[in-house]
Length: 210
Length: 190
Image 1 (cartoon, rainbow over the protein chains, first blue to last red):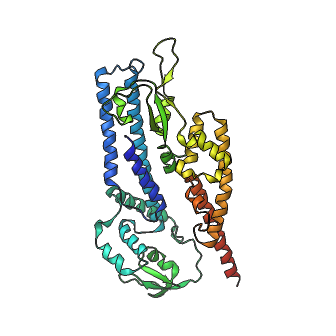
Image 2: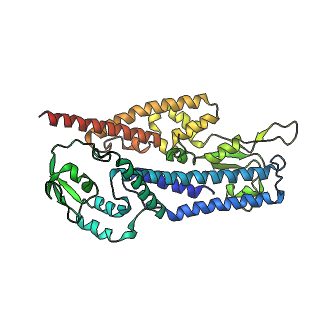
Image 3: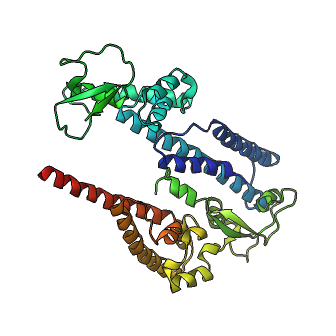
């Protein structure tokens, strides 16, 4: 029945809400739902054609009812499509605020799943096609990150995306998980000021040693 | 309820029985029979997003002495039937609501917007309150012991529908959060 595919998409969105990571974009399903809308629109045009623009719902109630069903199905599909994408962009925005390298999300997930082992992340990083985002979503991430950076740039002495946990110690020991090139902070390389390396920890380059 | 609310959209997909009031040649597929016209009087289970507006859309009377009618007449879905209602009246805790409908209360509120059914309304309200107390009890226990409600309540928890599951999760996280906070307080006192 019309609307069944849209429902599948919303079930995917429901699943996404309960997952820690963002599942792959359902390219095929989205395409099928939009195709259904186009088919319905064609049906409507075909139904109205014999009337030459002078259709009166009262004269032909069966056709009027069919048109209503088609219209409602299209509207339903639209809502399903929008809700699916809205759920995903919400999640993506959340990840950007958390400071994840979202475009490299696939690598991020492997790392999360395998308990912070550095080898797993470096193997998937080489494989750029692992991303769970659609090309449009990747574009969205880039532009949203730029927006956020511009917004944050207004305050130089406070990090809006920094941790809300008050630090116990000003300095912490860190372990390097993946190669980030040579980074020299004001105080050293492994015993550093927490505020200086928070970003690198969030991005998965460093691990904090307690 | 927002336009983007996933649970509202899923509730909208719950099916309700609709009786068609006129023959419609093109809609045979709704009754799984695309080759045949949909006959007047056929009852089909349609999702709420379709059924509600088909039932509300008025078609003009075809003759002067006929009253304005809609395309379909709605009926209450099986999950709100008399049998279910009497079971809930007897013991709200004994009915696995999830088996009736994943969005039992969501469907109920939507239907009661359309039907004047004071008794169903009262039963649903009493059911929710009675079960909510039990849910909070189970969730508190589970939150305090770190296992998700093992120990007796499994059967009851399996039968929770979506609203109740959310309630359970909130109560569970609340109990767990306050336990963690209390431990944190103790640690800092040292």
